[in-house]
Length: 389
Image (cartoon, rainbow, N blue to C red; front, top):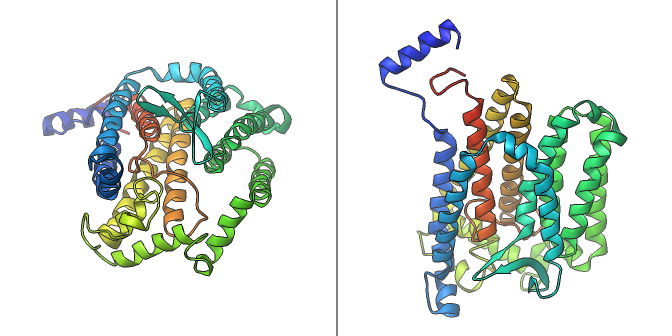
């Protein structure tokens, strides 16, 4: 520590305002989102849980269990060396791809509504598509460090990332889960841009990704139907446009301060997947514009903090930490933006949960592990607990 930094640190000690052990902004945002999510999951699912399981706390209890297990995993991640994640990135990617293969094996993968996205592990289900999101970010961040010079070469650098994305994408589309493909592709493209690749290389990757998504949409009738319904949901409000219409009604009923916690009508019989994909719409109805803006602000602070940590890590010469922080911030920001956009009718319907809030065990575990990594990066980036930025 320099002399001036030591003087400032001493003043901080004397003033009795030591720097917190872990970043309070990140912990505060995550705690607020998780806490609000638990309340809204119970509110959105209590009627459905009573009808289906004769237990209004069914979904809430399972979500609370996921929060507890996820918090333990976050704590463990926060206390692991960051270099361990850098070294194991390729193995984690391989594990993620193997799980994506296993989920497609009859007898192992659980098929729900025509989609094979889960592996049954006793009383819980594991969703490999959630794990592969984080594992890909961990791998790509390490790849950018190992191949820093080759990133300027399309064939020996960027094309390899394209092949990895293609392998994961093909497996995800077999489930099918185009939403996860969009999230992963957008996140990795953002990481490529921030890594400083050549603009024309980035343009080629972006146009290729957009073209593939457009082609997959056109070739699958049900996906094309979703796009058509998104463009004009009121043309068929009781069939193809039903989900979006009901979500928009929920937003409209919420007005400024909402109809009151637990007083949503849309969650009862009208809004499908009220405690999962459309939890944000129920939040809008019960808490109004105030609740919507609060959730948006929490995600904005979380993502902004992630990029701030990334910049500080890069300034400190910790390139892997910087790339990983960028990837985690992008991953959470992209998924949150898409989920909220779908609920508000800004984007076509996709089966994506709202991070930290929507019901889903695998999603909660992976998101809390991601935050553990971000907290770990912030901690290791400091010169010491009393140092200055």
